[in-house]
Length: 236
Image (cartoon, rainbow, N blue to C red; front, side):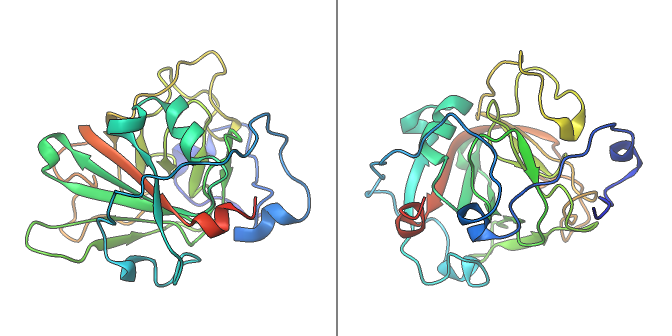
């Protein structure tokens, strides 16, 4: 197993699991994690326009695909439960979030999507991004420190990139054991809350700041949207 080069604190965890999914279509072959949640036909938010240029996904499996909004927190609900009800088994996705008063827009790309596996995935294909006020194109923050633990898929939490790169709606109790998964007694996360620390798992901002939000490590969100490909979702 390849080692996870993220930092010394991570190395102190006793249990390190490796994702059985090695690529986008890994879930079509080989061993899978048993999951009680079954894929369900989803009614997309057809009236929600893409808040990003399609050039953002030019180097991903979503290139050339029709993208639709499968989750909008301000309509569907901000709980991690609602997030997974709408986003599980939808395939690779783009997450877009807005801080309070819609003052800052940022997000991330998950090539693995979500299945409530309570596992993590190794990949170089995930990335974060944010917009500056004077730019229409986002600034991309790639995975650093190796491919290890790029994404987490906690059933009781929202989107998580790396151990600390970006967490939207983390479980209400501390995650115990790091990669071993969250405490099963923890409460469901609230996607109104997000926190970020860059540099260990995802690159720092261009201005050197160590949070995707800039000077703040934690923020309150007004909305979270997830966009996916209905065609890819239909393959589940």
